[in-house]
Length: 152
Ligand code: DQA
Image 1: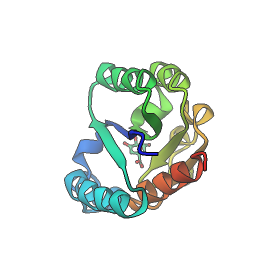
Image 2 (image 1 turned 45 degrees about the vertical axis):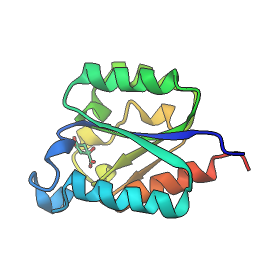
Image 3 (image 1 turned 180 degrees about the vertical axis):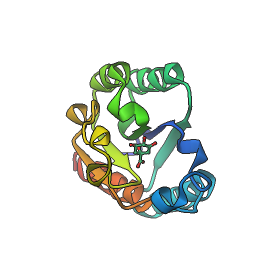
């Protein structure tokens, strides 16, 4: 039993600015630093898993990343933080609907406690659950949730 396993992580528009943008909401830690920590967490808790991640400001690239995931026979699940596209992008929702493996929606901030226009998510219906409000820790929690979805 040494099958290749890939876990995906998609971050949408403006997430590349975390660490610099609105630190009160999103914290001071940049994605490269958070990624190092996540990588380490995965090595400890999910041996053999490979992380494939994409952080993009291009909606086309984000959709194509989900298509790649859909076509990957080794994909076991993914985290998706679409940023503002969460609330607007039917295209991303449709791509998420087609991945065929569990997705977890994550948000750094507590979107349900913010402006009313952040309270609806177009991708939520395509995800097994949502983690929001815990900063980068939410990504670790999301991976834990995905790990729990794996067949024994
Ligand atoms: C976000 C929440 C979104 O409403 C917002 O547009 C973002 C970041 C979050 O991670 O808290 O860009 O997805």
